[in-house]
Length: 178
Image (cartoon, rainbow, N blue to C red):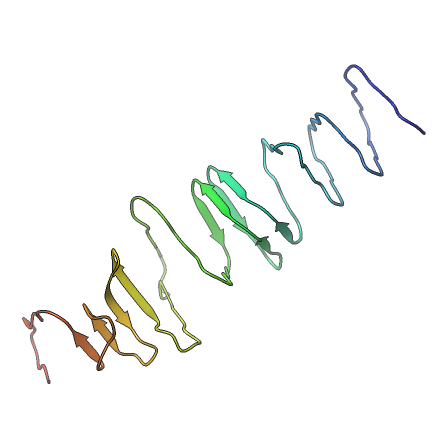
């Protein structure tokens, strides 16, 4: 009991159990580690130079920054982030993914959705009264799909099943009814 000070290195070939508040200026663990309870670091960074496996729910309050390729997969568990997530590399999500608020993808290049499957590549469901889809060229709305299934091209809102502002190229084969 009491304080113990060690001025050099300590090598332990077995198990170390620590209960109560513990302050470590540097901790290097080689091999498997089982950390239970709350782990907090209010004075600096926590660096993990290998794989980090988390079983159960993970809550992050603050910013999660990930550099390099990242894979989040869950079976009955969740990754919950309260504030910002910054990923400086590739993000791979395996399994069903739910965004309960806005999803913003900002890129200086292009964003790709690639599906190699026989299923539908993208399904958008609008459960409220708003429009289903709006596509913009800069700040100009160029395509709208309303909740009623009306489509507007080059117009702020559709006035009929199909509304087109501008020229319509009718070089079609078959019958066109107006």
